[in-house]
Image (cartoon, rainbow, N blue to C red):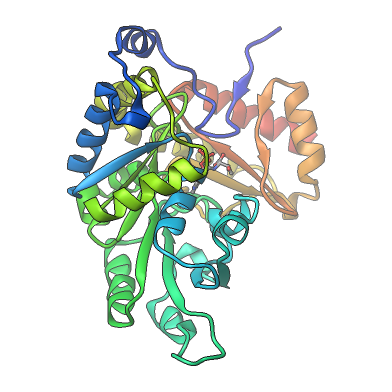
Length: 345
Ligand code: TLP
């Protein structure tokens, strides 16, 4: 069987030989007792990278987001977030279920939340109303095609938050990509947020793991929330070692994935009736709108799969491809050719 080109997500990467060696050599201890030296090193490295006081290792981005929300809210509070955000769309309603939060979703055209709109939906102090508590940002933005939210915009939203006694949470699952695309240090993005989660298992090629970052006080509460969610892990230094390896060797090369996505987009945009959203792709995510091509995502994805190319559905007329560590530029170009063949058939 010919090689499969799997561009469903940047989560599909497999640990490299070097990463596996780091895993094998990791020093470990019981992390619930805060006795795992490799986890502690990873947490220290990440806290420093984001210029925050402390960090916490969690199994997934979803748990990262949910731990941050739980640690900073009370049931009945309201969080303000983009209708297209990951927290609103892909976390199985966890904010409502596990933290009792009401989600106030606002439309954010182009993935750019407007500080004015946020200010409009903050609740007044009234016995009838939920308390507006956290504004959730996402950078880069998954459902908006990997768009980078400009730092100035984040700062403006943070100002609205502070003026109204709200907190800012940043879903920075792909904050690496934002930083690689703009050259803005991770710490500058982090400075706009009270809590942040970022994924080692996306552009960085680790098999698992996300980091929650913030003040020491906040991380103490987050550690408790993680335990409540069943995310307290024991000799987990074997996985933290993969995270440390990913930061050292794979973080510096994240921008290469943007080049691969651009090369792919170059070919895909010439397919009749196809539109990229947005065009050009700003980072490593390419969202392809098939509406004008007269094909459904289901049909196109099935034909692609037959030809050994894997992408995912992303809406009524949309499919998504994501460039990552384990796919080459030539494979991305091959995938684009196959897509052209499938659509123009
Ligand atoms: N996103 C996955 C799917 O869940 C859609 C993907 O393939 O892109 N925040 C953002 C912005 C994300 O894109 C994701 C994962 C998460 C959080 C959750 O991370 P995990 O999958 O580790 O729970």
